[in-house]
Image (cartoon, rainbow, N blue to C red; front, side):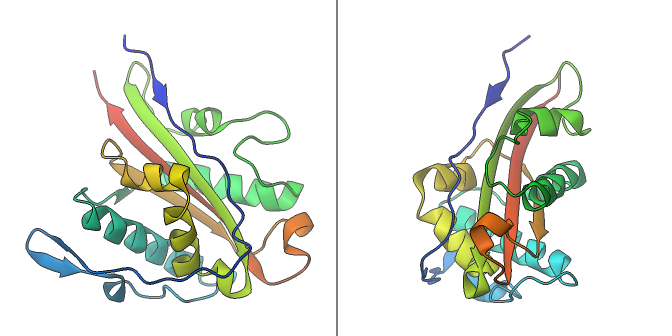
Length: 193
């Protein structure tokens, strides 16, 4: 049995103004750009998380297309795991890939149904938070693309699946009561044996 491989990027808090100029890209002969993604400048609320998650995945896939990588498919198991992590960070007032109790992205994803027993896998996770206009999908993806570790996860050719979890609040110690959001994006690829 092959040893599982695991990748994780360092967390980044998006606390400065970020530009969101995403250039056009071509894939399969069709032009794709950030303009083809809806709701990219929408500030997250409790009622629009599905739209925010769809916009974020669309922007990530635009970046992948720009760099010749195939689009990530949404995965419900990764989505539930990512949502639980975002909710936990807000509820327990922390911002990290590892929970205060020591649970890691590997623990969270393996506890979901994403990785079958006796399968090889590659996993990764990006987290972000922002307040006000820095909480939009465009600002979050732009920040990830400016961070080497997050960018590496987004452009990793091995990843096939993605799950996003966005909570329309930031952990209190970082958001200081401002309107904001906490994002978790999990990435994966499973090799069935």
